[in-house]
Length: 301
Image 1: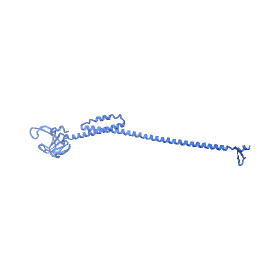
Image 2 (image 1 turned 135 degrees about the horizontal axis):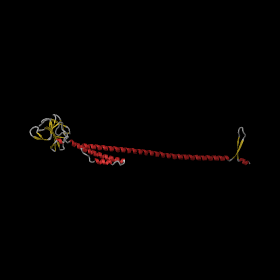
Image 3 (image 1 turned 90 degrees about the vertical axis):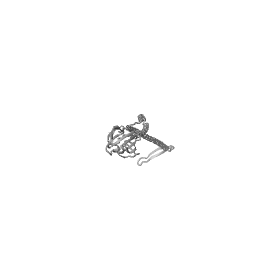
Image 4 (image 1 turned 180 degrees about the vertical axis):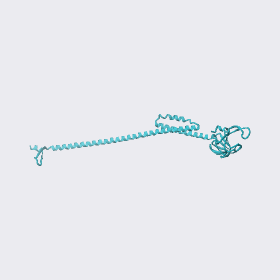
């Protein structure tokens, strides 16, 4: 009996006013409880540690996924920016294409106006226009390239055309088609009654009458090959237009150019008078083509 009692622990509870209470528990129970508590603490520690490790692992995976999402978002923003730039570039290409089309139209319009003025036509204009008409089915980049090439060709053609126009205008400046003075046409080219005698004689020019001192201008661009007094013609100016034409201005009261001078079309060269064999103040005007007199009225405009 004593041995069994020794295997137990006695716990006494002594309150202040109540009866003493006594409990007996086996001596192994505290050890078991301590071990159980230790195991529970160990398990809890292991569980918390595992839970913490799982949390850290999930947190790391989350951070990796978040970084991937951010990278994808940045890539998406980059793609959207590239798409926006491509759209802007495409719009610019279309605007450039429209601008080139407009320039081609303007160049073509100018060329037609120049052709109309000069009375000539460029043979290659239709070919270039035909080339531009088939561009609508191409991509915008290819269309722009073709339009730029076409515009370059058109510019080159226009430059050549302008050179031709300038040469044409330069030639027209040497054609004696400008009336040399203002006044009344008193005598035409051909046979006429001799104004200073009897009979008829051939008149190699036209007579334009006006008051003495009226301006006389060059009928075309040329070089002065005679300036002075000529028998029968009085004070006279003769111009060589270096294209087969020569013009003669006679009966002047005063000549204003010298031999060797180059004069422009419409330039003042003399003053009207009545020198030489003349019946009054007028200009006797002749045009010679390849040294043969022709009727000035067939050329004058």
